[in-house]
Image 1 (cartoon, rainbow, N blue to C red):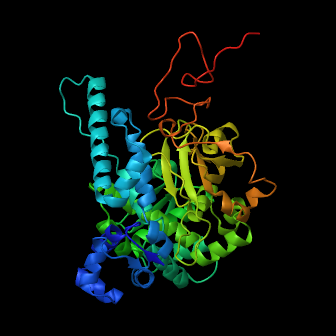
Image 2 (cartoon, rainbow, N blue to C red):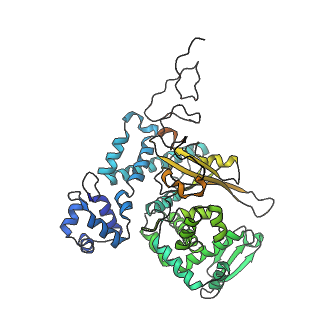
Image 3 (cartoon, rainbow, N blue to C red):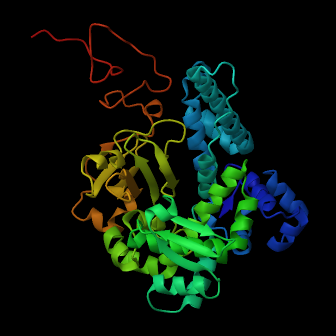
Length: 476
């Protein structure tokens, strides 16, 4: 294999070196090449040969296939969504334009993303200021830490080997037996905490409260069995894997203390999932039961959402599971969790396609829905979705309803029990990313016109949608 300048990897090699905080000389020594040759690679003046790729994989735990494509597809998808904004309508930008920008100037593409995000924040702040009629009081830009954390997770392909290792190490120390009892014993023994269960009134409405000054962990009586185990594992992660969490947060590009705290929470949740559903046994079980989510939940004492999330993290090079994408949405369509290893683009800056089955799941609460879908470019995906409900603490508390979706490319679908009896070569549901990026004018769900297509509106004629063209009428 010889990846030449038609597929330049220089910027990715340079980004990897900077992420590892290495000089060119130090990295070249680890790769067994000269510093001058590495310099030529980073400037796309020499190809990345197969031996160099293999050495990169060995030295830096990088999967060759993943490294060869890395985040180019994700960056390309996000830029296409950005340029679908009506703001750019008059520029006549095309898909090939975006692809060329990503291939030749990836950092410039990322700069465009940063500028676009800043523009959206400023615009939203201006709208909020006008709406509040605050008499001139300043309104700070609304920068979403959750978006930064999502980017962190996607950048690591939702796989964190240091947290996997820390979870495996703790699991060995815990020994056998029921995991919850072992965790409580470890937290109260070596870690010196007192673990209590308290009423909702006593916890002040908190589901978990860790008081480090008093060495006290209080869990709410409102937690179900799955959530209680997960919260114990989360706290264990905060204490046992503290140095690994510190390192990951320090290396991440996060702009605020809020984002850094949210990242720590997300990474501790990752540790908890790795502890409750350890990598090798969980992957073996998933393959054995053909990714039956409910059976995995019973076996590992985990909820439907926890299992779906864990399945999306099985990205270990050389020992990976089905490459899934994972989403969680509320009934208004807001995406609160998203990750894609399947290659599907998940909307970041605008509403997602209403034809995705994760939205339709709200029509049949508690039931698993399956969908074979086809994107405008022809890629096919197989997805399962189901609602998940978070119960309140009592009669007067609201019950939160979300839908989670888990999907993969159609070629992996036969590995899933949900594909039994499904004709994967048959008719698929036509879906898109967003209306602005989808060219299908005959869609009855269309809410806005597609990019770079002019509207031909006739006040006297109504098509399948407001934006759908209609042919000439025929005489009866």
